Length: 430
Image (cartoon, rainbow, N blue to C red):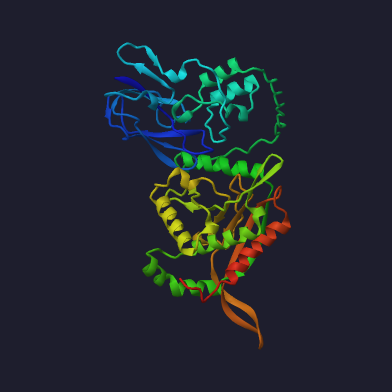
Protein backbone atom coordinates (compact mmCIF):
# COMPACT_ATOMS: atom_id res chain seq x y z
CA UNK A 1 0.00 0.00 0.00
CA UNK A 2 1.07 3.59 -0.57
CA UNK A 3 0.15 6.95 0.84
CA UNK A 4 -1.28 9.27 -1.82
CA UNK A 5 -1.58 13.05 -1.48
CA UNK A 6 -4.79 14.60 -2.83
CA UNK A 7 -3.91 18.07 -4.10
CA UNK A 8 -5.98 21.03 -5.21
CA UNK A 9 -6.08 20.64 -9.02
CA UNK A 10 -5.49 23.42 -11.52
CA UNK A 11 -8.88 24.47 -12.90
CA UNK A 12 -8.02 27.19 -15.37
CA UNK A 13 -5.28 29.44 -16.69
CA UNK A 14 -6.00 32.31 -14.29
CA UNK A 15 -7.15 30.24 -11.30
CA UNK A 16 -4.62 30.15 -8.45
CA UNK A 17 -6.87 29.04 -5.59
CA UNK A 18 -10.28 27.59 -4.82
CA UNK A 19 -12.65 27.38 -1.86
CA UNK A 20 -13.66 24.01 -0.42
CA UNK A 21 -17.45 23.80 -0.44
CA UNK A 22 -18.05 20.37 0.99
CA UNK A 23 -16.28 17.07 1.72
CA UNK A 24 -18.36 14.11 0.54
CA UNK A 25 -16.28 11.64 2.59
CA UNK A 26 -14.75 11.72 6.05
CA UNK A 27 -11.61 10.29 7.66
CA UNK A 28 -11.84 6.49 7.67
CA UNK A 29 -14.20 6.30 4.68
CA UNK A 30 -13.35 4.12 1.70
CA UNK A 31 -13.36 5.75 -1.75
CA UNK A 32 -13.03 4.39 -5.27
CA UNK A 33 -10.74 5.81 -7.95
CA UNK A 34 -12.37 8.70 -9.88
CA UNK A 35 -15.17 8.95 -7.29
CA UNK A 36 -15.98 12.56 -6.34
CA UNK A 37 -14.36 13.18 -2.97
CA UNK A 38 -15.10 16.89 -2.47
CA UNK A 39 -16.62 19.94 -4.13
CA UNK A 40 -14.67 23.16 -4.63
CA UNK A 41 -15.50 26.58 -6.01
CA UNK A 42 -13.62 29.37 -7.74
CA UNK A 43 -14.81 32.83 -8.72
CA UNK A 44 -15.84 31.20 -12.00
CA UNK A 45 -17.67 27.98 -11.26
CA UNK A 46 -18.16 25.09 -8.83
CA UNK A 47 -16.31 21.82 -9.58
CA UNK A 48 -15.98 18.28 -8.31
CA UNK A 49 -12.59 16.80 -7.39
CA UNK A 50 -12.25 13.03 -7.96
CA UNK A 51 -10.16 10.66 -5.90
CA UNK A 52 -6.85 9.79 -7.65
CA UNK A 53 -7.04 6.19 -6.42
CA UNK A 54 -9.07 3.66 -4.48
CA UNK A 55 -8.34 3.53 -0.79
CA UNK A 56 -9.09 4.82 2.70
CA UNK A 57 -8.99 8.49 3.70
CA UNK A 58 -6.39 8.81 6.46
CA UNK A 59 -6.34 12.56 6.98
CA UNK A 60 -8.23 15.68 5.85
CA UNK A 61 -6.12 18.84 6.12
CA UNK A 62 -8.69 21.54 5.33
CA UNK A 63 -12.30 22.11 6.24
CA UNK A 64 -15.27 23.59 4.37
CA UNK A 65 -14.94 27.28 3.39
CA UNK A 66 -11.13 27.14 3.56
CA UNK A 67 -9.38 28.80 0.60
CA UNK A 68 -6.67 26.50 -0.76
CA UNK A 69 -3.95 27.32 -3.31
CA UNK A 70 -3.59 25.19 -6.43
CA UNK A 71 -1.15 22.33 -5.82
CA UNK A 72 -1.67 22.28 -2.02
CA UNK A 73 -2.21 18.89 -0.36
CA UNK A 74 -5.79 18.68 0.94
CA UNK A 75 -5.99 15.09 2.13
CA UNK A 76 -3.99 11.89 2.58
CA UNK A 77 -5.31 8.63 1.12
CA UNK A 78 -3.98 5.14 1.87
CA UNK A 79 -4.24 3.52 -1.53
CA UNK A 80 -5.41 -0.06 -1.85
CA UNK A 81 -3.35 -2.16 -4.26
CA UNK A 82 -0.41 -0.95 -6.28
CA UNK A 83 -0.03 2.67 -7.36
CA UNK A 84 2.15 3.70 -10.26
CA UNK A 85 4.88 6.03 -9.09
CA UNK A 86 4.55 8.03 -12.29
CA UNK A 87 1.05 8.97 -11.25
CA UNK A 88 2.31 10.86 -8.22
CA UNK A 89 2.33 14.60 -8.80
CA UNK A 90 5.47 15.21 -6.76
CA UNK A 91 7.34 12.13 -7.94
CA UNK A 92 7.47 10.68 -4.38
CA UNK A 93 5.57 7.73 -2.89
CA UNK A 94 5.46 7.34 0.89
CA UNK A 95 5.59 3.81 2.22
CA UNK A 96 2.78 3.01 4.64
CA UNK A 97 4.59 0.11 6.27
CA UNK A 98 8.13 1.46 6.64
CA UNK A 99 7.36 5.16 6.86
CA UNK A 100 10.25 5.96 4.51
CA UNK A 101 10.27 7.79 1.18
CA UNK A 102 10.90 5.98 -2.07
CA UNK A 103 12.39 8.52 -4.44
CA UNK A 104 11.68 8.09 -8.14
CA UNK A 105 14.56 7.91 -10.56
CA UNK A 106 13.31 11.15 -12.09
CA UNK A 107 14.42 13.04 -8.99
CA UNK A 108 17.93 11.60 -8.89
CA UNK A 109 20.63 14.09 -9.64
CA UNK A 110 21.77 13.86 -13.22
CA UNK A 111 23.28 16.06 -15.89
CA UNK A 112 21.09 19.15 -16.06
CA UNK A 113 19.50 20.14 -19.37
CA UNK A 114 17.16 22.96 -20.42
CA UNK A 115 14.21 22.28 -22.66
CA UNK A 116 12.21 24.57 -24.92
CA UNK A 117 10.11 27.25 -23.27
CA UNK A 118 6.59 26.15 -22.33
CA UNK A 119 4.48 29.30 -21.78
CA UNK A 120 1.63 27.14 -20.41
CA UNK A 121 3.79 25.46 -17.77
CA UNK A 122 2.19 25.56 -14.32
CA UNK A 123 4.37 27.41 -11.79
CA UNK A 124 3.45 27.03 -8.15
CA UNK A 125 3.68 30.05 -5.83
CA UNK A 126 6.73 28.40 -4.20
CA UNK A 127 8.52 28.04 -7.55
CA UNK A 128 7.73 31.65 -8.47
CA UNK A 129 9.00 32.83 -5.07
CA UNK A 130 12.30 30.96 -5.51
CA UNK A 131 12.70 32.35 -9.03
CA UNK A 132 12.20 35.92 -7.79
CA UNK A 133 14.77 35.48 -5.00
CA UNK A 134 17.33 33.97 -7.39
CA UNK A 135 16.82 36.55 -10.13
CA UNK A 136 15.35 34.09 -12.65
CA UNK A 137 12.98 35.29 -15.33
CA UNK A 138 9.67 33.47 -15.82
CA UNK A 139 10.77 32.58 -19.37
CA UNK A 140 13.91 30.92 -17.98
CA UNK A 141 11.95 28.93 -15.41
CA UNK A 142 9.50 27.78 -18.10
CA UNK A 143 12.44 26.17 -19.95
CA UNK A 144 13.34 23.96 -16.98
CA UNK A 145 12.44 20.31 -17.59
CA UNK A 146 10.01 19.34 -14.83
CA UNK A 147 10.14 15.93 -13.15
CA UNK A 148 6.68 16.12 -11.63
CA UNK A 149 3.52 14.56 -13.02
CA UNK A 150 2.85 15.64 -16.63
CA UNK A 151 6.18 17.48 -16.61
CA UNK A 152 5.28 19.83 -13.75
CA UNK A 153 8.20 21.96 -12.53
CA UNK A 154 9.00 21.22 -8.89
CA UNK A 155 11.09 23.04 -6.28
CA UNK A 156 13.86 20.43 -6.65
CA UNK A 157 13.97 21.06 -10.41
CA UNK A 158 14.51 24.78 -9.87
CA UNK A 159 17.14 24.22 -7.17
CA UNK A 160 18.93 21.70 -9.39
CA UNK A 161 18.97 24.25 -12.21
CA UNK A 162 20.34 26.97 -9.92
CA UNK A 163 23.13 24.68 -8.70
CA UNK A 164 24.15 23.56 -12.20
CA UNK A 165 23.78 26.68 -14.32
CA UNK A 166 27.04 28.04 -15.68
CA UNK A 167 26.32 31.65 -14.87
CA UNK A 168 24.46 33.67 -12.28
CA UNK A 169 21.87 36.19 -13.30
CA UNK A 170 21.90 39.52 -11.49
CA UNK A 171 19.01 39.76 -9.13
CA UNK A 172 16.23 41.96 -10.39
CA UNK A 173 15.63 45.16 -8.44
CA UNK A 174 12.57 45.03 -6.29
CA UNK A 175 9.84 47.36 -7.41
CA UNK A 176 9.23 50.12 -4.94
CA UNK A 177 5.76 49.85 -3.54
CA UNK A 178 4.08 53.24 -3.31
CA UNK A 179 1.47 53.25 -0.62
CA UNK A 180 -1.64 55.24 -1.57
CA UNK A 181 -2.43 58.08 0.79
CA UNK A 182 -4.77 57.11 3.54
CA UNK A 183 -8.23 58.53 3.14
CA UNK A 184 -9.36 60.97 5.80
CA UNK A 185 -12.99 60.16 5.02
CA UNK A 186 -14.78 58.27 7.75
CA UNK A 187 -17.50 55.97 6.46
CA UNK A 188 -20.86 56.86 8.01
CA UNK A 189 -22.09 54.34 10.58
CA UNK A 190 -24.85 51.96 9.49
CA UNK A 191 -27.70 51.98 11.97
CA UNK A 192 -30.16 49.12 12.19
CA UNK A 193 -32.49 47.60 14.74
CA UNK A 194 -31.59 44.07 15.81
CA UNK A 195 -34.57 41.76 15.33
CA UNK A 196 -36.41 44.32 13.21
CA UNK A 197 -34.09 44.79 10.26
CA UNK A 198 -32.75 41.77 8.40
CA UNK A 199 -28.98 41.17 8.31
CA UNK A 200 -27.90 38.94 5.42
CA UNK A 201 -24.36 37.60 5.31
CA UNK A 202 -22.84 37.63 1.84
CA UNK A 203 -22.24 34.17 0.45
CA UNK A 204 -18.94 33.26 -1.19
CA UNK A 205 -20.04 34.12 -4.74
CA UNK A 206 -21.59 37.45 -3.74
CA UNK A 207 -18.35 38.49 -1.99
CA UNK A 208 -16.32 37.62 -5.09
CA UNK A 209 -18.73 39.55 -7.33
CA UNK A 210 -18.47 42.55 -5.02
CA UNK A 211 -14.66 42.42 -5.08
CA UNK A 212 -14.63 42.07 -8.88
CA UNK A 213 -16.96 45.02 -9.41
CA UNK A 214 -15.03 47.32 -7.04
CA UNK A 215 -11.76 46.29 -8.68
CA UNK A 216 -13.18 47.09 -12.13
CA UNK A 217 -14.36 50.55 -11.11
CA UNK A 218 -10.99 51.30 -9.48
CA UNK A 219 -9.08 50.00 -12.51
CA UNK A 220 -10.94 51.27 -15.57
CA UNK A 221 -12.12 54.84 -16.21
CA UNK A 222 -15.65 53.99 -17.33
CA UNK A 223 -17.45 55.89 -20.09
CA UNK A 224 -20.96 54.89 -21.17
CA UNK A 225 -22.51 55.68 -24.57
CA UNK A 226 -26.14 55.13 -25.58
CA UNK A 227 -28.12 54.66 -28.78
CA UNK A 228 -31.72 53.78 -29.53
CA UNK A 229 -32.48 51.17 -32.17
CA UNK A 230 -35.60 50.17 -34.08
CA UNK A 231 -35.78 46.38 -33.96
CA UNK A 232 -39.24 46.00 -35.49
CA UNK A 233 -38.06 43.85 -38.42
CA UNK A 234 -36.00 41.66 -36.07
CA UNK A 235 -38.92 41.15 -33.65
CA UNK A 236 -41.33 40.30 -36.48
CA UNK A 237 -38.87 37.82 -38.01
CA UNK A 238 -38.26 36.09 -34.71
CA UNK A 239 -42.00 35.88 -33.92
CA UNK A 240 -42.66 34.31 -37.33
CA UNK A 241 -39.80 31.80 -37.15
CA UNK A 242 -39.25 30.78 -33.52
CA UNK A 243 -41.60 27.77 -33.69
CA UNK A 244 -40.28 26.70 -37.09
CA UNK A 245 -36.73 27.04 -35.80
CA UNK A 246 -37.42 24.81 -32.81
CA UNK A 247 -39.24 22.19 -34.91
CA UNK A 248 -36.45 22.11 -37.50
CA UNK A 249 -33.40 22.28 -35.23
CA UNK A 250 -34.79 21.26 -31.81
CA UNK A 251 -33.35 24.49 -30.36
CA UNK A 252 -35.07 27.50 -28.82
CA UNK A 253 -34.63 30.77 -30.68
CA UNK A 254 -34.36 33.62 -28.19
CA UNK A 255 -33.08 37.11 -28.91
CA UNK A 256 -29.74 36.38 -27.23
CA UNK A 257 -28.15 34.43 -30.14
CA UNK A 258 -29.05 37.30 -32.47
CA UNK A 259 -27.45 39.82 -30.11
CA UNK A 260 -24.31 37.66 -29.84
CA UNK A 261 -24.15 37.39 -33.64
CA UNK A 262 -24.52 41.17 -34.01
CA UNK A 263 -21.72 41.80 -31.51
CA UNK A 264 -19.38 39.24 -33.11
CA UNK A 265 -19.87 40.68 -36.62
CA UNK A 266 -19.36 44.22 -35.33
CA UNK A 267 -16.16 43.26 -33.51
CA UNK A 268 -14.77 41.94 -36.80
CA UNK A 269 -15.04 45.48 -38.17
CA UNK A 270 -13.84 47.16 -34.96
CA UNK A 271 -11.33 44.71 -33.42
CA UNK A 272 -9.98 47.36 -31.04
CA UNK A 273 -12.99 46.77 -28.81
CA UNK A 274 -11.96 43.10 -28.38
CA UNK A 275 -8.98 43.72 -26.14
CA UNK A 276 -7.35 43.90 -22.71
CA UNK A 277 -4.78 46.22 -21.15
CA UNK A 278 -1.50 44.82 -19.83
CA UNK A 279 0.47 47.68 -18.26
CA UNK A 280 1.30 50.02 -21.12
CA UNK A 281 0.31 47.49 -23.78
CA UNK A 282 -3.06 46.83 -25.39
CA UNK A 283 -3.61 43.15 -26.16
CA UNK A 284 -5.97 42.80 -29.13
CA UNK A 285 -7.49 39.32 -29.34
CA UNK A 286 -7.95 37.43 -32.58
CA UNK A 287 -10.57 35.09 -31.12
CA UNK A 288 -13.99 36.61 -30.45
CA UNK A 289 -15.38 35.00 -27.31
CA UNK A 290 -18.62 36.62 -26.17
CA UNK A 291 -19.58 36.32 -22.51
CA UNK A 292 -23.25 36.53 -21.53
CA UNK A 293 -23.95 37.82 -18.04
CA UNK A 294 -26.47 35.33 -16.64
CA UNK A 295 -28.46 35.46 -13.42
CA UNK A 296 -28.41 32.31 -11.30
CA UNK A 297 -31.43 31.07 -9.31
CA UNK A 298 -29.65 32.33 -6.17
CA UNK A 299 -29.66 35.86 -7.58
CA UNK A 300 -25.91 35.85 -8.15
CA UNK A 301 -24.29 36.46 -11.51
CA UNK A 302 -22.10 34.31 -13.75
CA UNK A 303 -20.70 34.87 -17.24
CA UNK A 304 -20.64 31.75 -19.47
CA UNK A 305 -18.84 32.23 -22.79
CA UNK A 306 -19.75 31.58 -26.43
CA UNK A 307 -16.33 30.72 -27.87
CA UNK A 308 -15.35 31.86 -31.39
CA UNK A 309 -18.78 33.39 -31.93
CA UNK A 310 -17.75 34.97 -35.24
CA UNK A 311 -17.06 31.56 -36.79
CA UNK A 312 -20.55 30.19 -36.06
CA UNK A 313 -23.88 30.65 -37.79
CA UNK A 314 -27.07 31.55 -35.91
CA UNK A 315 -27.89 27.89 -35.26
CA UNK A 316 -24.44 27.22 -33.81
CA UNK A 317 -24.67 30.25 -31.54
CA UNK A 318 -28.21 29.28 -30.48
CA UNK A 319 -27.00 25.80 -29.49
CA UNK A 320 -24.21 27.30 -27.37
CA UNK A 321 -26.48 29.90 -25.77
CA UNK A 322 -29.15 27.34 -24.86
CA UNK A 323 -26.59 24.89 -23.46
CA UNK A 324 -24.86 27.56 -21.37
CA UNK A 325 -28.15 28.99 -20.10
CA UNK A 326 -29.43 25.55 -19.05
CA UNK A 327 -26.10 24.67 -17.41
CA UNK A 328 -26.19 27.97 -15.50
CA UNK A 329 -29.67 27.31 -14.16
CA UNK A 330 -28.72 23.77 -13.14
CA UNK A 331 -25.36 24.86 -11.64
CA UNK A 332 -23.40 22.45 -13.83
CA UNK A 333 -21.17 24.76 -15.88
CA UNK A 334 -17.67 23.46 -16.56
CA UNK A 335 -14.66 25.67 -15.68
CA UNK A 336 -13.72 26.12 -19.33
CA UNK A 337 -17.25 27.37 -20.12
CA UNK A 338 -16.82 30.48 -17.95
CA UNK A 339 -13.28 31.40 -18.97
CA UNK A 340 -11.72 33.26 -21.86
CA UNK A 341 -14.34 35.89 -22.69
CA UNK A 342 -13.04 38.87 -24.68
CA UNK A 343 -16.26 40.92 -24.70
CA UNK A 344 -19.41 40.69 -22.58
CA UNK A 345 -23.09 41.47 -23.10
CA UNK A 346 -25.65 41.98 -20.34
CA UNK A 347 -29.34 41.76 -21.20
CA UNK A 348 -30.80 44.07 -18.56
CA UNK A 349 -34.06 44.11 -20.52
CA UNK A 350 -34.72 40.60 -19.22
CA UNK A 351 -35.57 42.21 -15.87
CA UNK A 352 -37.62 45.01 -17.41
CA UNK A 353 -34.89 47.68 -17.38
CA UNK A 354 -35.06 50.33 -20.07
CA UNK A 355 -31.27 50.67 -20.14
CA UNK A 356 -28.23 50.20 -17.91
CA UNK A 357 -24.71 51.41 -17.15
CA UNK A 358 -22.85 48.08 -16.95
CA UNK A 359 -19.53 47.62 -15.17
CA UNK A 360 -16.73 46.25 -17.35
CA UNK A 361 -15.92 42.57 -16.88
CA UNK A 362 -12.16 42.70 -16.22
CA UNK A 363 -9.78 42.29 -17.96
CA UNK A 364 -11.94 43.26 -20.96
CA UNK A 365 -12.25 46.86 -22.14
CA UNK A 366 -15.97 47.06 -22.95
CA UNK A 367 -19.39 45.64 -22.10
CA UNK A 368 -22.75 46.07 -23.86
CA UNK A 369 -26.06 46.36 -22.01
CA UNK A 370 -29.28 45.58 -23.89
CA UNK A 371 -32.51 47.16 -22.67
CA UNK A 372 -36.09 45.98 -22.86
CA UNK A 373 -37.88 46.00 -26.23
CA UNK A 374 -40.93 48.26 -26.02
CA UNK A 375 -43.56 49.20 -28.58
CA UNK A 376 -44.35 52.87 -28.97
CA UNK A 377 -45.44 55.46 -31.53
CA UNK A 378 -42.54 56.78 -33.59
CA UNK A 379 -42.37 59.43 -36.29
CA UNK A 380 -41.37 57.71 -39.53
CA UNK A 381 -40.27 59.52 -42.68
CA UNK A 382 -41.97 58.01 -45.72
CA UNK A 383 -42.53 59.00 -49.35
CA UNK A 384 -45.77 60.65 -48.22
CA UNK A 385 -43.97 62.60 -45.49
CA UNK A 386 -43.80 62.13 -41.75
CA UNK A 387 -46.18 59.55 -40.30
CA UNK A 388 -46.77 57.95 -36.91
CA UNK A 389 -46.18 54.22 -36.67
CA UNK A 390 -46.02 51.59 -33.92
CA UNK A 391 -42.41 50.39 -33.71
CA UNK A 392 -40.43 48.05 -31.43
CA UNK A 393 -37.69 50.17 -29.87
CA UNK A 394 -34.71 49.27 -27.70
CA UNK A 395 -31.79 51.08 -26.02
CA UNK A 396 -28.21 49.86 -26.20
CA UNK A 397 -25.55 51.15 -23.80
CA UNK A 398 -21.83 50.50 -24.09
CA UNK A 399 -19.48 51.00 -21.15
CA UNK A 400 -15.84 51.14 -22.23
CA UNK A 401 -12.42 51.63 -20.69
CA UNK A 402 -11.24 55.08 -21.78
CA UNK A 403 -7.59 54.00 -21.41
CA UNK A 404 -7.96 51.77 -24.48
CA UNK A 405 -11.14 52.92 -26.18
CA UNK A 406 -11.81 56.50 -27.25
CA UNK A 407 -15.19 57.97 -28.12
CA UNK A 408 -14.75 57.36 -31.84
CA UNK A 409 -14.09 53.63 -31.47
CA UNK A 410 -16.72 53.13 -28.77
CA UNK A 411 -19.37 55.13 -30.63
CA UNK A 412 -18.61 53.55 -34.01
CA UNK A 413 -18.77 50.03 -32.61
CA UNK A 414 -22.02 50.73 -30.78
CA UNK A 415 -23.56 52.24 -33.89
CA UNK A 416 -22.49 49.20 -35.92
CA UNK A 417 -24.26 46.84 -33.52
CA UNK A 418 -27.36 49.02 -33.76
CA UNK A 419 -27.22 49.09 -37.57
CA UNK A 420 -26.95 45.31 -37.70
CA UNK A 421 -30.06 44.91 -35.53
CA UNK A 422 -32.04 47.61 -37.38
CA UNK A 423 -31.14 46.26 -40.81
CA UNK A 424 -31.88 42.64 -39.91
CA UNK A 425 -32.97 40.72 -43.00
CA UNK A 426 -36.68 40.05 -42.56
CA UNK A 427 -36.47 37.46 -45.37
CA UNK A 428 -33.65 35.52 -43.74
CA UNK A 429 -34.02 31.75 -43.94
CA UNK A 430 -33.77 29.59 -40.80
